[in-house]
Length: 539
Image 1: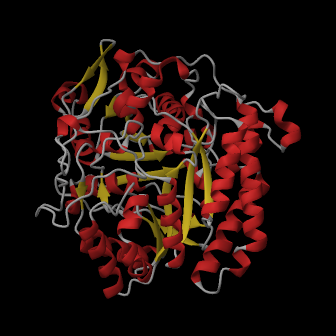
Image 2: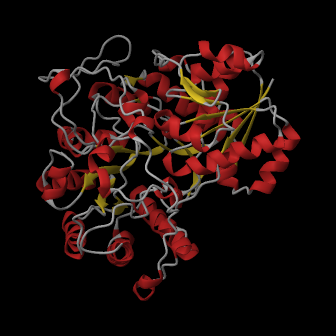
Image 3: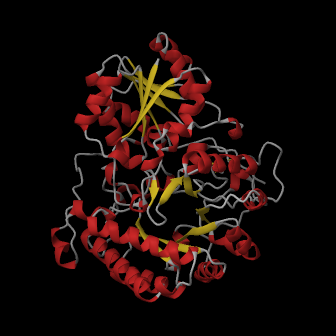
């Protein structure tokens, strides 16, 4: 049996300005399939290679796969649907499979839009994909009802089988990283190959706007030694010189994270790396930050989210302006590059509040700043709460760079222009008065590399999709066209899987009384000790 995975060709001018990111999902699925005896596996990275339909059509015709699988986050869903339609045109006998977070919760709408999809994998895909492949080796239509965690059409009606259990032992997964062409995946700031390994899956918190806890359902953390084993293999076998932990918050379990850093130091791994984490965890670990830096940590992105305390309260961040400023100072003092994340584009956004975020960035003095457009996931609790205030349902634009919510006091083009004004001022000052004088060694080299990535994306007009929307500066504001597909409509609430089973134990708070908290804040922490199975039940 021949299996072909294709990463869909979608670009938005967001995180990709820093480089090309390896599609880890392909490696994980290939690993379990080969362990199960399915050795004829192929991959096409249409995103990195920017392959158009004509090229994909020829490649599919050449390979004639028995199964063609792809994945999609929300903004890539239409590209994935078109890709699978193309597969059916070229090879009608091919079983088309779609996975990923959007299809997991929006499978009814997806199947209505794309009835040519034979199977949707809902949730964590490794074990389910093996079952799909085994069924496809025989009569898939007869066997599919017994496979947990999938959805499909039968006589025009959507059938969703019961949810599959989550994978209990993440360390048993053996991703096949050799399936990827590593020379393609370069991190521009350092000019080296980049990987995105998992330290854990899921999150113990249940933020109203987030999707991590919904998709992964349980919080499970890996053995730190096994994670470092994988990083060493990526370094030695595939030439990886930089990695970013895929977790939203790898510092949640401090004991496990400290063990991970100690393992990196003891084994002299010698790689620089980055991560996202929470302001409160940085303050908690103030004395450990130099230790983290010795382990190779060079870049921390903080979910400070917003400058105005009003907005922090709206997101239930449970952090203060003073905490944000302190966390940034602590990281810089430890020699770690710090990036502040700001969410803009809420309904109450004004030119004054956008100016306030710039002044706050100047005051906090992070090394990097990122202004992301407020993007409510269509399967999140927050999306449902916003109701009619969401008026754009073109999911291709749900990419954190396109204004989805229209502020009451300004139009979307003005919002984009003011955000670009913030970027221009912030990075002009950094380029002239900060980065060249950031000392010597790794930190200075890293910052100058980040500036190179920004300039490269700006010159190519790929940053923030500026070239696509026709933005060339304040003088072009009235000509900006976001090209929303207005024919797209809100999914019927009955077509969305809003709920998810989430096993969670918190300190001093019963599950029935839990509050939604955001990644930058929250009063809960994991205990120092975790259970023997790797800390999957947070305490």
